Amino acid sequence: MAVRIGVCGAAGRMGKTIIEACQETKGVKVTAAIEQKGSPALGKDAGELAGTGRLGVAIMDDVARAAGAFDVLIDFTAASSVPANVKKCRKAGKNMVIGTTGLTPAQKKIITAAARDVAIVFAPNMSIGVNLCFRLLEMAAQVIGADSDIEIIEAHHREKKDAPSGTSLRMGEVIAQTLGRDLRKCAVYGRQGVTGARDRDTIGFETIRAGDIVGEHTVMFATGGERVEISHKASSRKTFATGAVRAAQWIAGRRKGLYDMQDVLGLE
Image: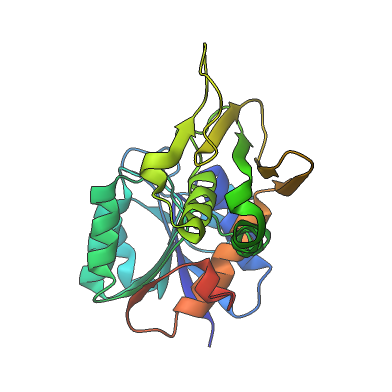
């Protein structure tokens, strides 16, 4: 039996790509589509809007009203919208896949609390390649991290609202945890002016926002005689959408708990 998927933010770029990915994946079916109140997309067919052909699924403006039509809700909306969506899914007993970034600690606590009653995959990046990079970064940090200057450079399209990206922050967390550091204390976000010599125990972040860059991340481990770089470059949002659909299939059969893509891919 196909997993019934609800897509939140169905008229956005990621929402449309997720609908397309669902259409190309066996064992799933888009059965609900949600947009914010007042959206010009309300009432339109989700498949036609995504350019994949008519689905017979009209876009609605309320997760609670649509809850009966889906098994798993995939949410790539704005950080401000996620808490309300989570609460509605928790009340309805519906599992979720959340790929939205830029959430505050308070907003993340709402997700953690909801996971006591429903199953949630919450990850800053759904790409299979990026999640493999997380594991590679852990290995690199174990082997050469303590003797390296570590820099994280990320680039995204000009419309991205949060910086640094959730993915780059997660990369920093993986490295810091492996090295026994607190990222809140050792992170340096950009440099300007006379900064003095670099502190080896810091982890640097540089952010680029330009054009239509989908997503690029490079982590540099630099020593006095060599440099190791671990990079991931996405050329299409499809990679994130495909990962999200895979996560939805994985989470569909679980009752409760908070998971990430490392769990989905068996990398933990």
